[in-house]
Image (cartoon, rainbow, N blue to C red; front, side):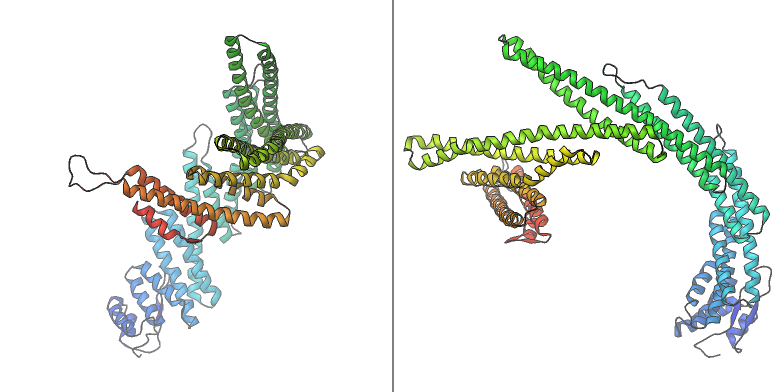
Length: 631
């Protein structure tokens, strides 16, 4: 044999077969292998591999030497490399050898008590030998080894499954089995059955385990439903005078969790025994019962929400009485007391309204869950429909209130505008002694206009959200749909108007040297432009908004840059000496340094958010980052 290849191949056997060789021609390596002197052959093979790295025949026989030395894992690594060879017969033998070595590894692991790891190695052994047999079904030794390993794997899986069942039974506490072990045991039995599908004993193990799990899960599900039913009976019917307590709310949550667990148990039982009609029927009945219980939970939340609404109505009546009294009350002490009571009632109404809405939403979710469990639950369907209508009306009423406020704010803008224009005209001809007063009055009116526009925009956005919820809850609510269409038609105009007014004020603040306030107004304007652009359906308006927003962003970045530079200059001018030591190094004003750093940091974030890159306009954000780091 030449120095480049060593083509003697040996199928390393298991304990029940004798070794055999296939020799190309005699050379020292082959003689040593034939004589079983693998340790002496190993350095010769390694030497040849230095000359011809990756030679599959050399790798194969080097693996044999490791196998003979008991280094099975290294043998597997080398035979895995041989699988890439062009000699398909050699590849087949390597695959068989991987199976043999993996079996040997499993034996070692089992002696160490690592049963799960041994299972993995047995699987690899069986799969590798199966692959070798599929490639060459006349490969007798591989066929024998495959059958042997398959039997060993089956026996191991059955023994492993039995151990898990015994362990689970030994952990039985108050009638609860360790289902994790049962599931794992069932997986072992099913794998064994897939290898020996005609084995009646294994089939019986599978059937018995499935039945035990099914019975246990169904029994657990019944207990869950019974417990949920008892829990619900402890929760009273809420009224405006006697609403649900926090503990009763927790009881409802506990009952819902028990219902969910019960359904999961019945579904699990049915999936484990798909051919068990009793389990299928039990699941259907359990879902019906669970649906009824979920409907009862939803009723509790709905009734408590209604009780809160009744309480809110009573408080509103009291507030109206108080407000009427305030109009006629002259005693300051009494007025103060009535005013405090009015405010307290308003706060409590707001708090209760929040919880009423939250619990109505919860009830709606629970009705939906009841229907998902049993679509034929007519009572749940009827209550859900009524609740959706009521919630739709409540959202519409909230929207109406916001629309009314928005309309009044817009009307205020319109009413003030003539006076504002008049004052602007007077400013051009006003005498010197009246200029300052007139300018202050104009500034006040401009602030009023911007505030009203922003208020109108915010209220319209809230109204839009409520109207969308209203129409989603009740698509047949035509009045809510019409109001939503009307709101959508002009909300972008109001947002644009609010943005324009904010920019006008920002410009005035900037001229007055109030940079921080100007920046805040600019940010608000950009937000409004962005919202208007998202809501506008007019292409011309969209184009105009894009231009306005781009200009506002560029101006804002310029303002931030100027502000940062101003702060940096102040920082340099405000360095202070260490007290008592004129030669001590100067320290920076820490508070001012932090302000500079934060200003630059916000500039960087703003620029990158807008451009998605390291540069924006004429501003290099990399440089800004360096400034932040330095400060």
